Image (cartoon, rainbow, N blue to C red; front, side, top):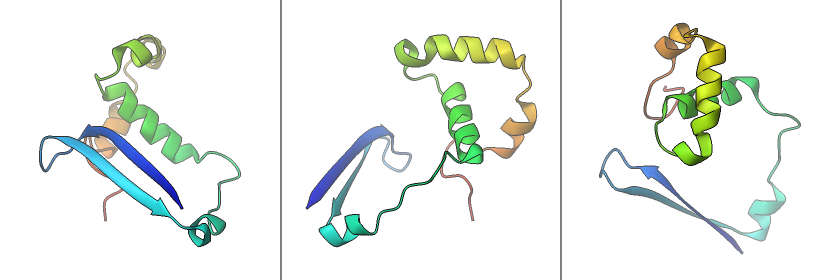
Length: 91
């Protein structure tokens, strides 16, 4: 059995850390598929979330500064479509 523990971000409902523990059996792992290539929409959305987020300045600070300079404020349309918090897309 493989166990993955993911910890990170803040939990909106409790204000504390979010923890997710997933247990995989051999059968679960046998059914796992990986994408042949990254999904352009998800890469864009996740990068945009990271761009808006203030956390992780040591890791992402330089990238954020460069990306903001290169984008020159051309994120207004994307900002109108992508929620600042929570799961995207919503149903």
